[in-house]
Length: 326
Image 1 (cartoon, helix red, strand yellow):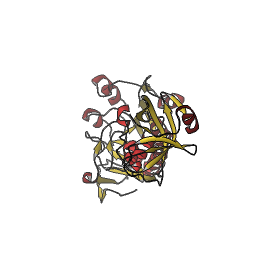
Image 2 (spheres, one colour; image 1 turned 90 degrees about the vertical axis):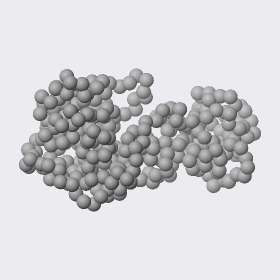
Image 3 (tube, rainbow, N blue to C red; image 1 turned 180 degrees about the vertical axis):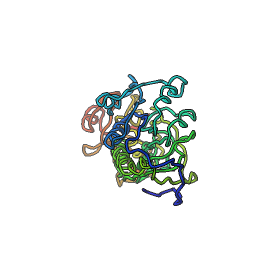
Image 4 (tube, helix red, strand yellow; image 1 turned 90 degrees about the horizontal axis):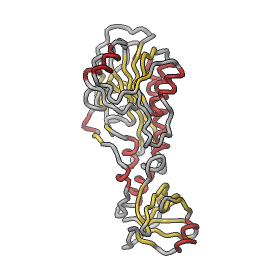
């Protein structure tokens, strides 16, 4: 387990006895991490009494695997409440008398009344190396801040999100040009590895929990499409980080050029330097570039007015001059 930002002292977590290896669980799950971690539980013989998941949002791009379909494949009952904390849902869950709750990328917070139900604790899989990047969309935030490493952390849940004691943690690298999708795929594997490694000890009542040093991280909120608007006064590296953090299937980094909306879908940082030039877009030797507040990025993929085009196509239509961003 990576101990970055974590105290080295183990925390005693109350265990009544050695647990039955056929432990039962209620699983709150969504997305690829939910799919893969539910698969791990099933592979270890955990009796999943119920899966609580979400209905897919018709306005959202669904590029990830379906937890509901995996549960149906294994004849596991599924519910999709808007709020899992309402009394009727809580009573349904309470009646199952589960040993554990697991939350794998489930999007609703579980309140105290639910967290107190499982006999041996409620655990969450978070997509960062806690205590860093507690809260929403940790992969995107890590890329925006230029991190070179992130990972997945399994921790006990409390009423405050992502601050419970850590049971397992797996790190993965963030390479300089990795997009959020590529990093998320690594984090999904990290989550699977972390859960697979600790689950036997957890089910046996022998897993060690480590308290977080919350001073070594912070909370981050969710992001909206408009948070992807580019501030061209920033450095080439900062703009590159934003572009890859919100690259498809996310909404993309946005700007305006020639009075039209423009989406920057892929960039590379160049070694070019500029002096006292305003931010601008141009084509040179068949490649597109953008001058930033400091430095230049190569714009590998972009859309103008909703149409993706190449550098040569842009130059043929608009010329090879430098065009300042609107």
